[in-house]
Image (cartoon, rainbow, N blue to C red; front, side, top):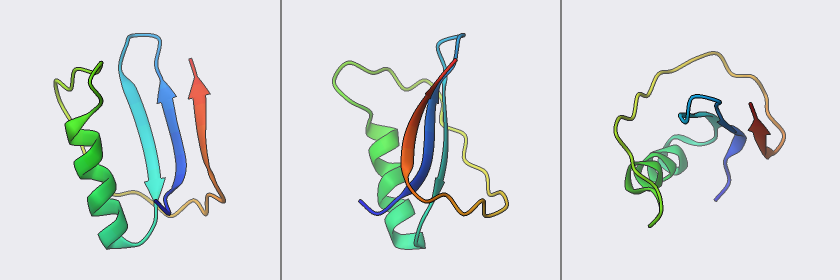
Length: 63
């Protein structure tokens, strides 16, 4: 999947994601986020648009 940005596991147990890519690819990415993995529990998914940051890759951040 051609998505750039980051995912961050927050101290309070939530997850933050900032993602950039083509619209149709981001739509698929959001659907995968809605589904989660077998071991995840998705209580709420909030999506908002923001400025383009120009991410060059996708990384995992902690804390």
